[in-house]
Image (tube, rainbow, N blue to C red; front, side):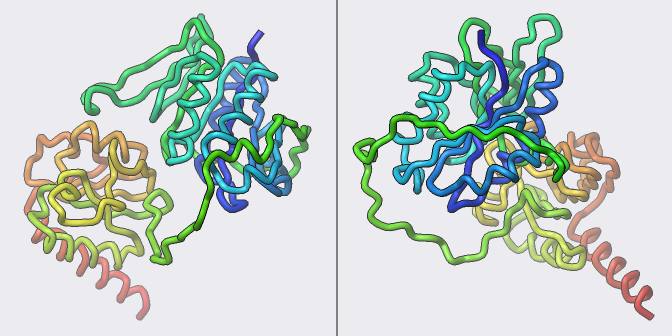
Length: 334
C-alpha cells in the first residue's frame, strides 16, 4: 500500500534549492493530516553532507542516491534513479519544485511509473473524506483555478511553483534516519556528454527573496514610467517588479515579471502601480503580507485585493510618496 510523502530535494552545485525547503514544510502539513511521514530524496555526487539540513527543515527520513554520474543534472540518470526509488518504496505522494529541473524530471518519471502529474501547482490540500491530494493550479490561461486529483494511480505527483509555500522553521534538534540507496546507476546511463558549463556572471535579483516590491503595470505608460518606481524602491530598500503586460511591451526585463507566467512572490510590502490585477497577476502576489494599490480605476481588481488603495494618477502620487518617505527618514536622523 502506497504511503508517505516524498519530496525531491533539488540541489545545484551542492546547494539545496529554496523551493525544496518550502516543500518540506508543506509536506509536513499534509503528512500530519494523512498520518504519514515526510521522506526527502537527495540525488547527486558527494551530497551526503546536505542531509542534516533536510532533517532540520522537516524530513523524517532521507533517501540518498550518491553517484558520480549524478554530479550534474542530466535527464536520464536522474530519471532512472528516482524511478527506482518510487518502484522500491511505493510513496503515496511525490512533490517536485516547478523549476527547470523539476519540470524536466517530473513528467519523465510520471511516464515511467504510469501515473498522473499536475504541473505548476499553487496550492496543495488533502480531501477530508477520500484523503486524496487536491492539487490546484491556474488553468485556461489563468482565468480559473483548477483543482485536480489523481484517483486511480500512485504516486500522486505534483510540481509546485517556487515561492508559493511558506518556509518552515528550522529545528536543529531534529534527528532522522538516512538511507543510502543503490539505484543501479553506471556511467553508461550518461547518454549526454556535458562539454562545458557556463555561468552567467551578471548579478540577478531574486524577486522571491525581496521583502519590498514596487511593481508596475500598463498604467506606468512606458519604460520611462519605471524611473519613479525605481526611485521609490531605492528609498524603501526594495526592488522593482512588473506585470506581464509591462514585460511583453518591452518596458522591463522578463526576470522581473510577477504572476502566473512569471514569479510567485510573498514580500512584506507589495506596491502595485497601475496594475489592474487580473487573476494571472494575483496568482503571483496575493500572499503578500501588505498590499498597496495605486490606480485611477477604483473598481480595478487590484484595488479590491489591496489592504490600502490609493485612487489617482501614479505619476503624481509615486514621486510625492517618495519625497514624503525621504523627508520622514531625514527627520528621524536629526
